[in-house]
Length: 443
Image 1 (cartoon, rainbow, N blue to C red):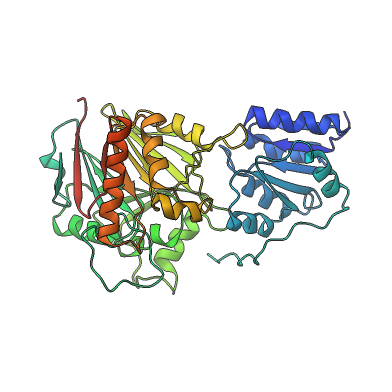
Image 2: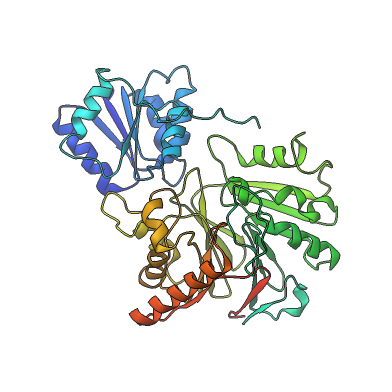
């Protein structure tokens, strides 16, 4: 069999098969790969003239494929079109940074798709350029009580504590807030285990309390959603990392710009790091993909890619018959189509969440002018929590750093008014720092 003209990589059967049929009808020989883990071996075996790849796929992402192809001397001549509903400007810039020849936004125009591919394949049109130059890759029951001892929890009980839930402002604020100013960090405790989601500035107080209270937990699991500064800024000042009594398990997805290992090295060993001493705790690094992981018998951590610039994860932690979902940076579109299916995919992933922690950065008014930047609007999240996630409790997360307490109060009031007006069965929270939520699961 002759080498194909085009290799399509897309895990969505509907979109992948449509693209294949359109290009086949245009006279090209086409191979469709739906498992991204098979993409690189297939590319090397078939040596197509052009690759059309989605970005968000389980296994490895389209950005990783792009980087791998363009950094391989034997493959770098192959042209690449990145096709994605994740059409943020920064994602376009990253695609070109990793060598893409063209970025095509979903849903694409089926009438012009084949001609677009033809112009790129035959070199009759210049490669699309980003609007701004891409940056160079760098080198390397509810109450306020805070952290407590594991021994005070009964078997089957789960305590969730919010240590930070705000976005990172452009300048440091001069005003206090009842809701707090620290960035993303949430702890989840059971009688035996401690899990931490994200390492924003809220992690500093958490770490201090763990050490000062001589925590029962000596093994700590830290799950990073992504490497934006407000989600990792507290990692270098997390006190247990500098205490040999602790073991730290660091979990996260690699990004083509920076791996999880590189983030850890820069945090703990770089001359630019916030800390000036090396770690003393034992640190294990787990570089994960979009998948399900059994951490312990009866404790499962699942992950999927979020609709947000850079490789960003949504996590679901399942134990004692309870589901806790953490999606601090995730834009729900509210207008999903067959070509932009993030809402449906996320809905299936988080369905039945007992606590659904989700990005709700903007008021409805502000979201109208900030759509497609990576963060969600209030009403869309409330509707999604009921109609798709079928959640019991919704936690509005990643509160805009510029909003006053009065504006945040109104957001919560607006959310509850919508819940009441639509007859939803949903508890809605806009958390205050160190606020705790206690769940009673099955033993």
